[in-house]
Length: 272
Picture 1: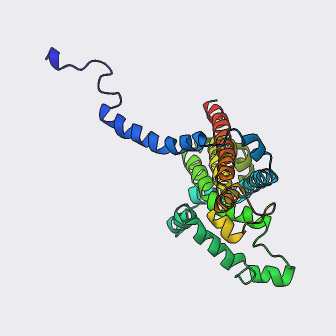
Picture 2: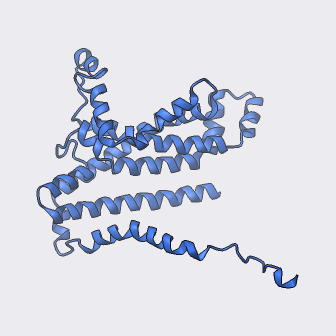
Picture 3: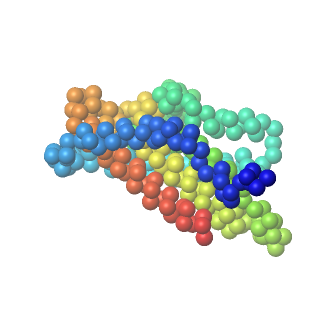
């Protein structure tokens, strides 16, 4: 029987059979980025980076992605609270509808926004006729399109944090006489802060890389609606491959920097 005993820790490591597909998966994700870096025109990179188009597109992308993330926080956190805590018929259907933009082709989302907020849309016609507000093909349209496709990431993260939060602290605060809103603001939000931070990071990154819904609903006007992904597409279509590579490198660098820096802060906050 001694020979049948297992050594401590034996068999608990990673099976070797998984190493090959894991390596292939890593190569599948990393090699395209490596090709982008290798084929970059490094000699003319400074000149291409200093063009007005790059600066305009980068500023507009960061501004719109930040605004879209703020909009998602204002609307998405309460929506996540309803999905996680409220009990009502059709909650599963509502959750499914909230996550539809995750699987919906972005171009379809842009068409849907046009049908709702266009000058002849369901709400857009009222906004245009009564208030003189036209949303399509404006900077505001970029923010709306990015928020539409990015909000589910925030809602899912916050809802998961709410479901995992220890409600005993909320019950104790309510027993001491705190109002529901005070409990939400002083107890619930600090408890779910890591989830909100994680959802915000994913939301910002998704908004920063949004293309399909944006170009459909907002168009491609330099300095107004032409974000970095749209600028990459327009530059590539014009035959300027080097310019498209440079713009792609900038977008890649910004995306990686945002994800790494903010995710580290989130993990630090959750550890404490």
